[in-house]
Image (cartoon, rainbow, N blue to C red; front, side, top):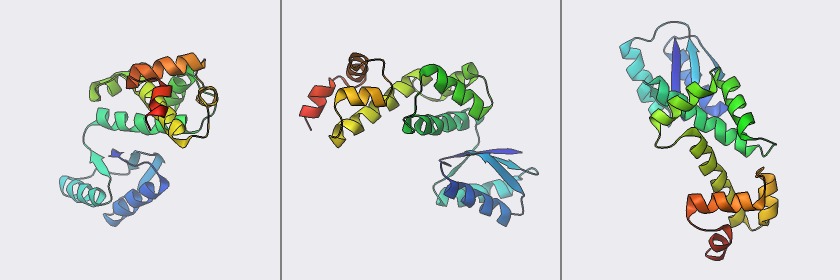
Length: 176
């Protein structure tokens, strides 16, 4: 049986989940964050106990696979963008497909069914959040930020930033 767990974004969370399952007598294995393989079926009573215990640790046992997929995608996107390694939309989609063992169109469909935006819009929004954080840090100029976040140009960064926030990066920085 496969369990999907929301907010399982670190090895600490993984340990909490495995300890809770073990305390209920289940053998489990976690290959990736958010997904746990359990050796046998979890009955309703144990499901409810596990749901309460995980809830007290800030985790949520998911009943819906598409919601679980959506949450895993969000975690992976933040992980990918946080590395600041060279990436493009194509590499993000191939990374997601590999990590989740699903075709990108299926991931994108599940994501958009559970969110009020497409996967591409979400990625853009997350990149703009990173731009905001870097502007707030006052360490880098727009050209450096554009380079670090792999925008094709500073103009591209400015246009995307304005489309998402309604402000240019310069106006945003001046209004801090």
